[in-house]
Image (tube, rainbow, N blue to C red):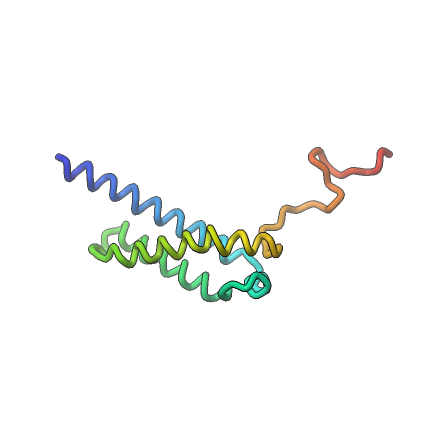
Length: 116
């Protein structure tokens, strides 16, 4: 009975790591290629490859194809955390993607037209 509860907790942890890695991979793919170089980080190809393999591996663990290789899952989680905590803010600072839309004259309620 206790093992059933423990297994359900591991399933939730696996799904959480899969979603986190997928979000990191999507954000890595959206950012501009030159922003990685401008921020002084590894290349876009490096990050999308590492995070893509992390998503694939996490999916295979969740599906039940691979088991007992927790160290690879932890390594992928560390790579995802490093991207989200270190690389993503550096890319945002440089202006590497994630377009907000609109122009520079847009205010919180729409475009500012100078009081006309």
